Length: 81
Image (cartoon, rainbow, N blue to C red; front, top):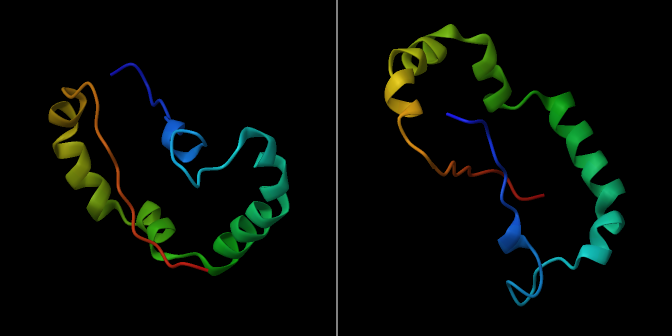
């Protein structure tokens, strides 16, 4: 496995009609910082997973299999604010 690569291509206009324009990115800075602060204050469930080795042990058991893939997608479902 070579590392993690984030591909945000399909977040941006014109790739999707209502996508973010590159010029608009800085307009979201304050909103994003506020959301991150709220997440860290609330300590949502996904952060609690880091403290629970039960799940980590299961992942480590299949680590070699996971690393055999060239690409994979992680989907998450969250609360809309």
